[in-house]
Length: 190
Image: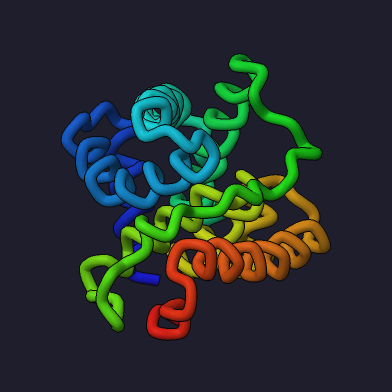
């Protein structure tokens, strides 16, 4: 709750023209916002462009924030919408896109018997990139950001059933992708 109060104070200061407060909000939320944009765009440079556009929108629309939900939910909704709009402009997004079945060459698998802790994040990111954008987004919001299904619905505009299905399928696809990347060593990571 303390975070929400801090965010509320910062956004109120932004509404009054305090650019320093906006910088504080950007610094607080840029990493998770970039992660969300990247899960949709699948390209870091494009995700950074989306994030920049999203933060410009947040700054321009700060006056319309009503404190009816958490600032983070409002921000993530803008990031998600901006990313999907960018994909539509590129004509790359398709609701019926299937899970990428591409497998990894054996030489790309780790050579040691156990996965080093610093490699774990790399393999998780590689596996996330193989997921459908909706699945990756829902998994990130739920597991990395800690949002509830109701909050994810508010952020994405997806129905509760779709969110539950994406969580279920996303976990399965994530496990398959990790097995492709790591073979038998996947149990060390999970």
